[in-house]
Length: 401
Ligand SMILES: Nc1nc2c(ncn2[C@@H]2O[C@H](COP(=O)(O)OP(=O)(O)OP(=O)(O)O)[C@@H](O)[C@H]2O)c(=O)[nH]1
Ligand SMILES: [Mg+2]
Image (tube, rainbow, N blue to C red; front, side):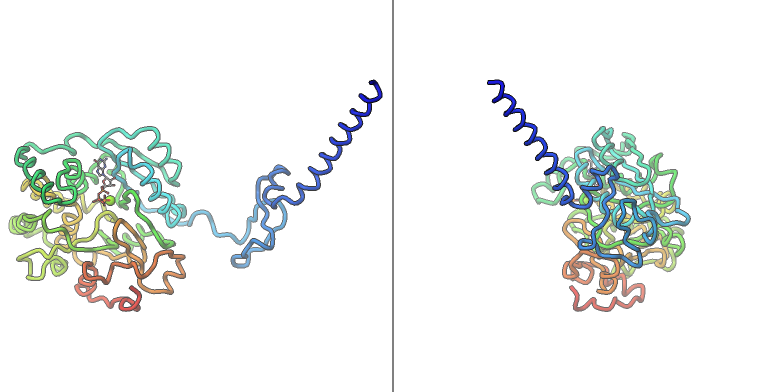
């Protein structure tokens, strides 16, 4: 019995020795990164076979990070007094997370601008945790004051309810929604006056589930400031007529009462085909905007918003903030102050702006299909914008899409 126990002990010791030998020999076959982790460094050293050298950067086969030859993590130079701004509900968290990730990857990781989030309810911890982890700048979370997200006292709420019923029957998108109307009115007249926004001069609006398809290597805010721009767009189209039947009447009332607010060299030709008598429904799509907050806070814009608001179309119809901002910019800014960002490749369901020009797309690592570009299609107003501004359409516009 004793000798068989001794024999068993020999067998156990032999198996243990074999396991130790196997462990050390097999660890040398692990991928480079894993062996570094085992050796306590945590930096993957690239192996020749799976690395494409960028520029002249020498490949260091050691375990420390390569310090030379890589671009800086952020671009040096002055920053503008600017912020991203997003209106969202807590339930939008994962859709806005996708948008933030794209904006950060394509632009903001180099510039680290702040991000202001606004909501008609309190933001919850998940929303704050997820969004602040994704952003490179500071994040701020604001609650919208009740008086900016409710029916003003001059609105007949029974009449507004009747309109919603009618629009529901006609199957007009968001036609029966009260919150959508508050949202459009808020984006038209209040977001730029929220206390958190008062710290800034420039904004870039970002909505849930949007995409950016190309690298943006320069500071778009600084571009706006340096070139005297106040408002910008990437997509333009015709508004759904049923949502704004009397908007242009209200605008004409404003023009008549405030001729001093109308810019001399304006973009009326973008908005109207008959010198201002009727609206052609063209507007810049406001789910993307880079703009100047001081302009929105200026007396001409506030007078414009107040005039429209008094006429009640945010509730008696379903006026969107896109035509409201666009008409304001088109009439009250000289046309040179509106900018088309051909180089910002963008998607918001269902339209894509994919920059015309193959070399640009290659140089900026774009991943949009030029065939999806909406700019030169019949329902886009961008060709009108080019015409009005005497701009040549970019090379390739007639065969890329
Ligand atoms: N806090 C809050 N945000 C809202 C509400 N409704 C819409 N929003 C936000 O307002 C912006 C515009 O709303 P969307 O629902 O995207 O409207 P849209 O772009 O016309 O329509 P979609 O095609 O659905 O995107 C988005 O940033 C939304 O997250 C709301 O009731 N409360
Ligand atoms: Mg949207």
